[in-house]
Image 1 (cartoon, helix red, strand yellow):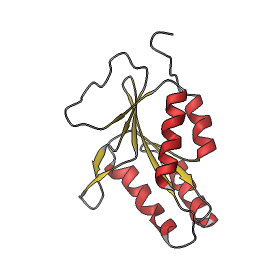
Image 2: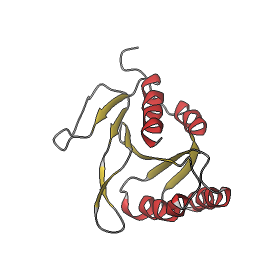
Image 3: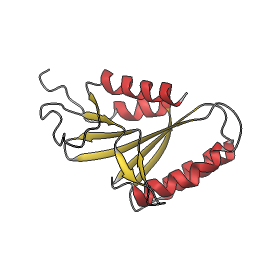
Image 4: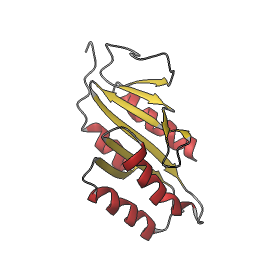
Length: 149
């Protein structure tokens, strides 16, 4: 399910003309002519001080947006990770903007509402939570222009 969500986020980026690349340590400037670059599996150090890889990093010129995808189709305790996701976005991810894309029907409504509220109330950096449709609508508002259109 999470891989499917990642594939749909990648597809949304490609539709807007973004270049989608896998992260490489030696690749500082993937394509200087690309209007937007979506880099997959960009590492960061979690609040637990261990290495992890995020879903995506969107580069729009100097602007950097961390995009984290989380899918949960079955009920259970996975939605108890929302505070962990929030704290990582707030304290561990270096980007000034963090976007979470949630999918599936397994998370408790109260847990999702808490997560959305916490991100919306954050003033240290811009944080938002979207469904896939909400993410696509947000992504459509980004100033991405094809390089040689």
